[in-house]
Amino acid sequence: MNRSRDNSNERSPLLNTNGHHEDDERTRGALSTRDPKSRIVVWSVLTLVFIAALVVLVGFEDKLGDSVKGWLGILPKNPTKAAIMILDKAPVIDGHIDLPALVRYKYANNVSAIDLNRKMPGHVDIPRLKKGKVGGFFWSTYVSCPKPDIAGKNFLGASWKVRDTLEQIDVSKLLIEKYPETFSLALNSGDVKNAISGGKIASLLGVEGGHQLGNSIAVLRQYHALGVRYLTLTHTCHNAFADSCGLLPGIIPLHYGLSPLGRSLIGEMNRLGVLVDLSHTSDDTARQALNHSKAPVIWSHSSARAVHEVPRNVPDDILKLIGRGANKTDAVVMVNFAPFFIAYPGEADLYAVADHVDHIARIAGKEHVGLGSDFDGIGEVPEGLEDVSKYPALIAELYRRGWNKYELAGLTGGNLLRVMEGAEEVAKELQTANTRPVFDIYSKRKDLPPRASEEDL
Ligand SMILES: [Zn+2]
Image 1 (tube, rainbow, N blue to C red):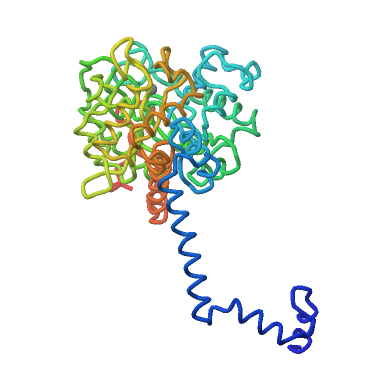
Image 2: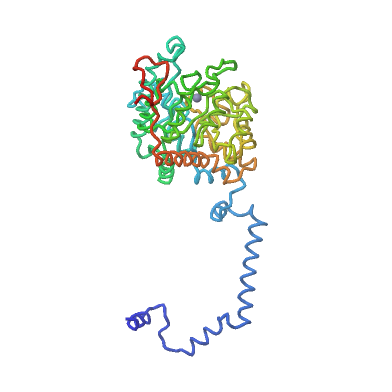
């Protein structure tokens, strides 16, 4: 067998078959690095080529064309071009987009009347998502807080909010299905990565307020079954689970953070793998949730209070609780673009948003900041960040400020993916340990019979 293989090799046209072995030896001898002189020549030439390449790279980096630089993995000096190159590899995954709310309030949830391939009245449509290099976003399935006179002081009159939330989940899913070449429903970090690598926009669902649960942890389980992967513990109202920061300063606390039912809710979110979202919550709620959650948490759309003082922004003392060291919780704060949260009237622009990103990065670390624009949920927009097509301008500004490509890839989506993976890992551990579902019932409900205690069973 060996012989026949040798024979076939000899017939290869790549081999010299003329049989002049002496010529072969001479030729080989001239090039052989066994000859000390030849070796010196070869190594000298290689060294010169190497030094020349270094000189070109270091000394004449500016002169290299952008395509050559791209090939070499070097970003161009031009921030706009650099931003596009970064976003091509690490597109934006926005923590909070209110397109479903726009569909509710402007189109009465008539999905057939929506054409996302044309310019939509808000900040989001497919052409602008593509221009803005968006690789994913959380579709916020928001419905407003019930009016206090309807909800009552115990929140027992909030049941239509569950219907309305189901309608918003329905609208989101129908729109995602309507454009299968663009959107792909994502239920975990793996789905997000697959969607992006397939050139699609990963579409995640988030519920924006505990009031949307109708006081029931069982409702959370069913939202999860429908694909919801974050719950904002509160919107602008307190609910049975936790205190809100309200909209304006001065809201009077009800639970002074989480209620006992709120702690049970977080336990169930950890078990299911639903991210705890602390945007809109009071500072006490945020501190207690950071402490109580076994899984990493998010702020889906919140900025920095030290940069602009409003209750919706995250204060430095809470930013300092974020991290991966001892007594810290991994988290990502995704910066909100709403002018009211960013700067004084008339001063909200792209640079002010970049200031918020920079500040959160300085206090919590660059691995803990992301983007949660609130597009389609905000009436006004900052100058330079008017819609979803403008993310590259913000990335360019941060590149100009010294952020490198790895840090920017974390900001655009990598940090959120790390947090999602962390929460998925915790859920897996809890489920593997057979942690049972939470059956706690809101104590103010009178529609169910009193329960026998565990000991009586
Ligand atoms: Zn919000």
